[in-house]
Length: 536
Image (cartoon, rainbow, N blue to C red; front, side, top):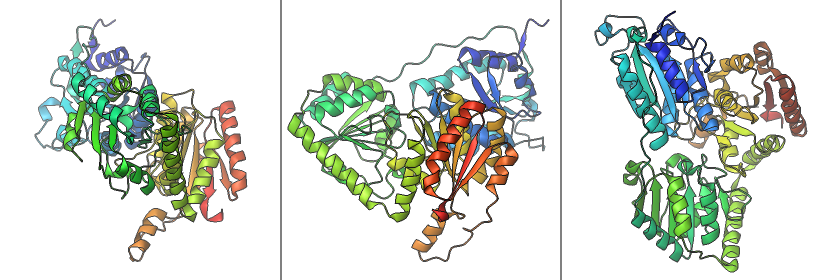
């Protein structure tokens, strides 16, 4: 019996100590020694059918579990196949650990046409990660992994890539590796917190914008809203951070002109954990006519967008908690009632602004969500029903909406939903996708069956790349390549081992969703519900 481990075995053993429970990957000739470590490991390995699926599954797992999603990738094509979901995770600040192989040390940079060779894999990955690093000796790995977890836990969480040459995986490690001391999160200046609290306490018409970085501050957001009678609008990632039934909640309506009118008339705006990205507002430009306070764990964000009057560099939940204690209660019944009235009017104005097609999609989206338990996680692809759904979804708790907001990549929904179910096995998962987007990653239906994951997929089939078709027409351009041949999704789903049903009448949808949920609880198998949009 060997008393030493290979580097590949030591890597997996160290991941166990960092409480990694699931990894996503497709083994290949360049990662066999890494996979040696999984033999007998507590870590569950999930086999996607494409490395893009591995990345999206890791993304969904991270959003649902709060832990980094982990991928094992082969050199070259495995890495480049996963570059899109890694870019998505980078854009949306999702923690993802990517461990890949790279060619043997003595071949690196020589361009001799080795299998899976890239000129500089590390350089390629550095463009879509917090950092990309190469292990030169086995002893390098523990420090690089500690640095990765510092990014996940103490900074703006983003993907990290660590590549290990094939020959390094096989080298022996004579000592047991243990986790290293974790870095501390940045602490906002206490004087600046008091200054911000004073500004908020004196405001007559404050407003809050909460982003994904504020998740975990639900109690503080509620306290600040109530103390200040301040409306709270969220990004999609932060949807539900203030219960959407709360009279001061604007929900994730940054796409609404009525919400931006409230922003523009506020005398103090507090922005917590958001980069104020254009992808959240879709044409409704921010107009901060009052004082601006920004909280961010990433100090670099203070140089982007509008200049804040007060910059609070720190972890948003910790800063919001401190602010909630320092702020003086300025609300009274009359002020709260007046503000709640303006919030209700803004929400009504947004609802009125929806056109006929959006109202239909809203009805479908809400019918599905209302037929499922309140804790259900919702994963949306980049599809018209997702675009409508993420703004009309009004959850009572945070963390329920998974949406590829920043990078905006198609094919996200199905594998992200699979990853989310693995990250939160106690929560049902429903995926909203379109007939175009699902074909990007439809092979991951096989993974859902193999893992016995009762995911429900709502396929919005309008038999067109409808959003792009509408864009062509809007610009007066004859539509090109927007009416692809659509496969028989019922037959496809059955071929993968899914249950499948087709809906042509809206009144049949809720029952189909409830039946799918119940059957999933019984047999653990996924269900495709194909809604024929043009028949409704």
